Image (cartoon, rainbow, N blue to C red; front, side, top):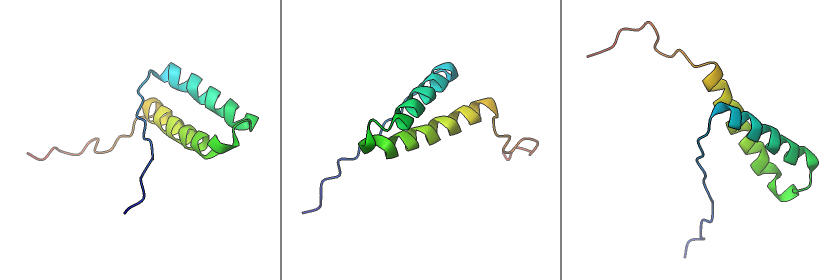
Amino acid sequence: MAPKDDTVYCDVQMPIAQARELLQLVTALYESRAHPGLETVFESIQRELTMSIDIVENPPNWGVGEPTKH
């Protein structure tokens, strides 16, 4: 019998102002060291939020100026 996968995935959408506020909250929780069992989760959330905020503030220009192929 295969081991049960109890991994939880969460996809949350929010305005950038809320993303910044959530990033501050998660950073404060991480830095408090009050929840050692969640430190890797906090790190992951920080990475995801930071990357998402950066993409909104500095959208990639992939394919800009390239002709479309029809």
